[in-house]
Image 1 (cartoon, rainbow, N blue to C red):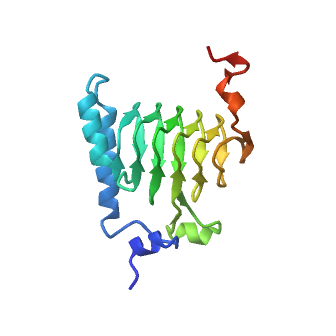
Image 2 (cartoon, rainbow, N blue to C red):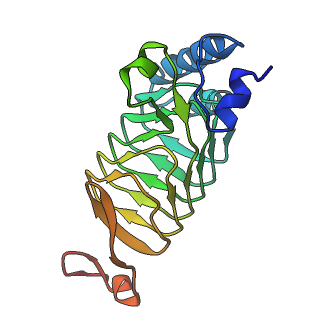
Amino acid sequence: METMRERRAAGRLFTDKGEGLPEERLRAKSLAHAFNRTHPTETGERETLLREMFGGFGSGWIEPPLNVCYGVNTFIGEGFYANVNLTLIDDWTIHIGDKVLLGPNVTIAVTGHGLHPDLRQRGETCAFPVRIGNCVWIGAGVIVCPGVTIGDNVVIGAGSIVTRDIPADTIAVGNPCRALRAITDEDRAFYFRGQRVD
């Protein structure tokens, strides 16, 4: 008989009430709670908690508060930075590359529910992996939806809702988020609204 974990991995509807899943969520939420209560000077304790919480954590900094569902389904590369109020709805895998920057109030969610109310009343859910490439900057208040891949070097504008894949080397904005333009060599010379790099 197919387990709920197998159903989840296959992108099929599943419930998360057994098979140790509630205990995994409680463990992650307990670690996040401990992380959020650390003093800003307790950098070693914060790093220890992040390594214990996540499936993989290369290096970096996360500003509390942090919210997670499972933690162990999230894999973060080297040189990561997340500003306050990062929310990771990681019922399934979130892969974040190296040198990724997240603004405040970013939500990355792999989880969804059926549209018909009968499916929601039965407590069924679905989850599709999210992948974020290297050297990505995601602005404040962005929501990344289930099943999305964001390519390398992408900039996602503040307040965007990312519902589809975003190709590498682009600036993308909006609701729904769409590629606005390619990142070019001219972007080396100007960093913000005509402000020249000196």
